[in-house]
Length: 177
Ligand code: 3AM
Image (cartoon, rainbow, N blue to C red; front, side, top):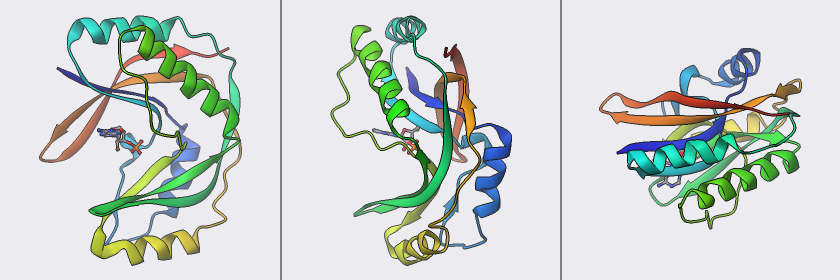
């Protein structure tokens, strides 16, 4: 089985800005440079033939390149804990690309994504008891902003989970424009 997702990878200067914003709060489990990305669609565990069909369907997507910047930070909270993330602006082209990626996944045989799409780059995860540290970070970094960067491709990643955390490997990449 292959655990897959589709994402945009911010370039190094943007990742550097995100890493610079991370502090040494032990309550927040920061994401490493290699794992910083903006998920367009989580696919989950699929067998090889379906993975190949998804990869082929993604290759048929035609979508123009666009500019994106980091803008602000936010939180997802669930009962078990949450994620702290950086937002992006504008959201419209990235949402349109995510919708195309979803349609390609459906064409390949996956169920459509039913949850709302909230474009974000996850910065840290935290346990329920540490939500205050996440709120504090959010308050202090509300005006986090980057220069715009040109989004010229998106990537199919395979996620390998281990005791040491998640390791993401690029399986294929797709040019925009
Ligand atoms: O882009 P982020 O970091 O928010 O949380 C996982 C990560 O999201 C998410 O997919 C991205 C790459 O692993 N993810 C993991 N399991 C998931 C699931 N069952 C999931 N998203 C939806 N459903």
